[in-house]
Length: 100
Image: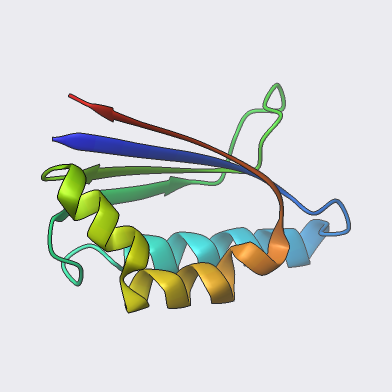
C-alpha cells in the first residue's frame, strides 16, 4: 500500500463562513473520489485542526500501489475536484508519499 498525505494552507483572505464552505466542499469532493478511481483505497480530508495547527486542511489517501497513485494524480475526476475545490483557494501545499 502507498499513502499520499497532502497538507494545505489556504489563502488568508478566506475567513469565517467562506473558509468553512471551502473546506467543506474540498472534503466532500476529495472523499467522494473513493470508489470512482481505480486503486484508491481510501480518502479522508481533515478540516477541523486544533488552534495549534499551522495548516488548514489535510488529505490522507491510501492506494494499492505507486502506479495507482500516479494514475490518480492524472485522473480527470481528481483533476476536476482539485481544480474546482482546492487549487483556487490554496496558498501553500506540502506532500509526502510513502509505502506502508
